[in-house]
Length: 170
Ligand code: PNS
Image 1 (tube, rainbow, N blue to C red):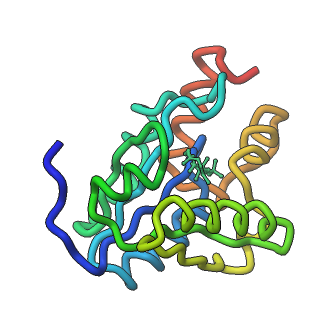
Image 2 (image 1 turned 30 degrees about the vertical axis):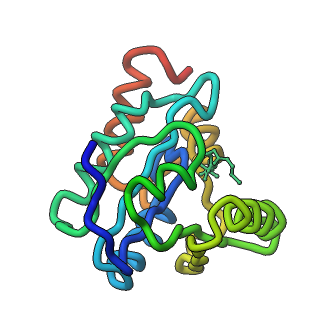
Image 3 (image 1 turned 120 degrees about the horizontal axis):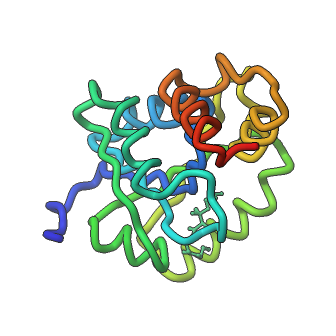
C-alpha cells in the first residue's frame, strides 16, 4: 500500500466494530467534521469468534458512509501505532462514553504515546443517547430477541438478520 501524503489533519478511528453502532457513527461524523480525512480502521483478529468477518464489517461501514468522501474504511493488524505511522496519521480518535471507559482508554492512549510520541489521541463524547451502547450489548440484545432499531444503522440491522437466517445468531 502506498502511504498517504503527510497531512496534519488525518485521523484514524480504530476499533473492532463488531458490529458498527450508532455510537460509532456519531463519533465518525464528529471526526469527519474536525479532520480532513478519517480512516475507520477495523482491527483484524481481535476476538477469536467475532460475529462479522473483517470484510463484512468493512462492507457495512462502507455502506453507511458511502456519501462521505472524507471517510475511508480499512483494516489493520498488529500495532495500531505502526498502522497510523504508515498512513501518516496525526491523531487517533476514540470515543469516551462514561467514566468506566476512562481507565482502559487512558492506559491505551499513554501506551500509544510511549510508542509514538508524535501521535495524539483525541477523545470525543457521543450524543447522550448512545452513552450506554456497545457492540457487545447489541449482539446480546439481538440474540435474545430484543429490539435494536435506532441503536445501529439500518444496514447493520439487515446484516444481523442475515446472520440470524444463516443460523449464526441463535
Ligand atoms: O473497539 P475496541 O475493540 O475497544 O478497539 C480496541 C483497539 C482496536 C483500539 C485496540 O485493541 C488496538 O489498538 N489494538 C491493536 C493492537 C495494539 O496496538 N495494542 C496496543 C494498544 S495500547
